[in-house]
Image 1 (tube, rainbow, N blue to C red):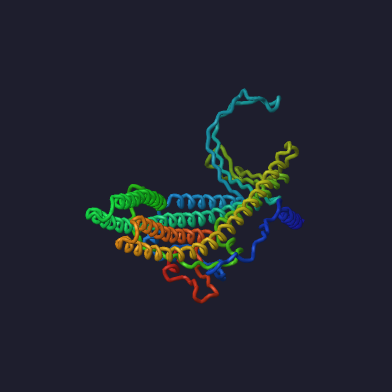
Image 2 (image 1 turned 90 degrees about the horizontal axis):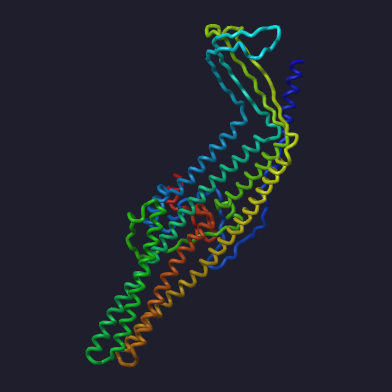
Length: 494
């Protein structure tokens, strides 16, 4: 009979535990395009979602950038903050999982007390007496909440999703940190290139000023030619100061991103151009699996869905099993004798009968919160599609524009040579030389700026695609993107 009762109780517990409040989580389906709008020279590739997406900056082959990235990953306070939040989320998960197990406690009491003789009577026939005595007690308590409606299970599900969201946020913080650093670095390098262009133009304009001044001293030309060349030189010198101001701002931003005080940081000028790497493109749905911000938004939906279950569980009774066992004696030497033993076994159950709609309002609140996370997820996905498509079409346009800009530089040099020869031969005025110098300067600066924009757009596309594309192979044998050895080594140590 006793065995039958235990079996019935166990079956009832399993049945109650099977009733989990709230909906099971299912990620919403999104309608996504099957391909990007590709322009030459883009080709689709076959992505590998399990590949590491870490040190993508190694693709640019710049040792100084590599060092700055490592410094930022080691010293950035923003990344430290994201790591701390992940540790908090994992601790919260551990705390939530502890509710699945019985809670045990050990209590001890030792006191000496006096009982009042004038306390209220418990029986009119019995007189109260004042006593002074010791009280020694030792007890073991236990409590266990039956997860009747799945409140604990949903709490664990929510904490698990929140921990995964924090991990995705950490990856997103790392990606944003490295891309912001690279963007500022390439802006600085582009400014160095422009300053180099201005430096060479200033040298050319100084030589031209010397030439036209000598011709003026010989009486061959008027003072207008000298004044025009001097005005052009002064304008170019003013542009140098403006570019130096921009460069200092990029340098200060790099210092902050690497965790270094701006006054203590400096980067030497380096006008050497950097070639952006070829970036393979997969299908649009792959960006959802590669981008950490999309993963974070999806995990936020799972956590919000679990909170619906936690709120719904409040409609059901709360049942807690709380047995206790211990010993109690007025003399410590008899504390562990059989007559000192005490114990209790009990089950407590509470059920809200009327709360003025509080529980229902909490459920409605959590459902609205879940709807908000779904809307945010759709927003993040659409933004991801937009950013990736912008990067793809932007790089294709910039590649073509850069080719045209280099051709324009070559043409401007030929025009300047011809204008200078015609002026020296007396066939044209010096205004033609001034115009040619200005055109060459504008063409060279435009070429430098376009190279910088190509680098920045490459970084932007890397961020849009969720990081490095290590392991992805393109159908085009000439565009294979297997991981280089340095990338594999760094990626394996993450």
